Length: 154
Length: 154
Image (cartoon, rainbow over all chains, first blue to last red; front, side, top):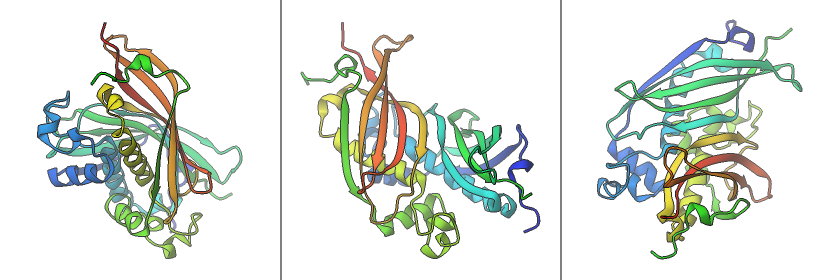
């Protein structure tokens, strides 16, 4: 592994694209049945009585689909993967529009801030602005994951 | 429905408990296989080579399990459900400790801030501090979901 993408190698403004991925009705209902069984995530009939109008995916399904697209793309880049130390959390997660069965999602992640860890100089903290779009190029989700990355060995 | 819990009926400091829920190894691996197939979420063997040590759940599995516990409890309170208009998003999500197969999770949600929507006076915005604990009472996740609630009709 001689081309590890260390913390130092990710300039602010660098972007990383992922997807596409199409969400099926079956998956939408299966996820909601297991994790978010609110009626408007389970059937068009129940959704018709709410502001959603028709069936929409759980917001937590959308974040899981982000991770699926992101990891799928990330795993094509072993040099990035080798420097990753996971994520501390996420700031400013916003569900901007409903995700519907049949929607095709894609996303982009842009480095917006970075700093060396005060307690661990072998680690950097990178904030990325992630936006997920549907097939109409409308943003459906935005958030700022906070990733930990290895710094380049001295 | 004569006992709807409107925006006005949720004072700052009010708490809402949910869970418990035990996470199985099979579920942990199934979720990761579908949404977050990083090796340390798929087997103890792969996790042993990382700082995780043993198999841990995807952070997005933990948020989905939060929603499962929360909705399960919420649906026992039709008056609260009737006033709910969904969530705008989440601030300050932090994965504080790994969640392991066999862990039993529970959580609590406390109202920390509230205001009437500037654009929609029939709606209030409620910020809740959510903390998820494991069976050792160690926090594994914290976050601030931003919920939309109906205000009491004039």
